[in-house]
Image (tube, rainbow, N blue to C red; front, side):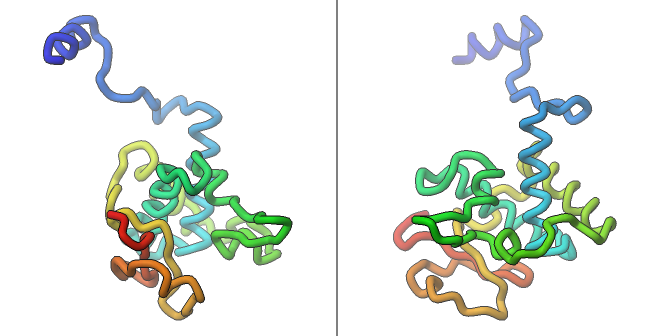
Length: 162
C-alpha cells in the first residue's frame, strides 16, 4: 500500500477526491443546493451546530441502504404508496421553496458547501437518521433511539445501530 501511495505522490496524482470549489460540476452544484435548501428551511442557518447536524442526518441517510443514495433524492423523498409523506416537512407544506432571507440563504449555502466538500462536523449526530424540532412530539420518536439534542432539534437513529 505504501508503494502505491508513494507512486501516486511521485506521479503528481492526488490522494483526495477532486471536487473543485472554483469549477464545480452540475451534480456537485445540485447536491449542495439541495443540502442548502434543507438547512435553510429546517434551521434558517441561525445556528452552525443545528445546520451541520441536520446536514449530517441527510448524509447519514445517503449512506444508508434504507434511503435514496444522493442528497437531492433524500431531501425530496416524499411519496410512499401514492401518499405524500415527505421526510422533511418544508418540502410538503405547499409553500414556495424559494429562500427569501438572503443572509440566511447565503449562510445556508456556505454551511452546505462546507459539509459537502470538506465534511466539516461530519458525524456530529453519531449516525442519526431522524430528527425533529424540540417543540413537536412525532409518533415515530419512541420507535427510535434518542441520540442527542443539538440546537433546536432532537436526533435519533434506528434501534440497535451505531
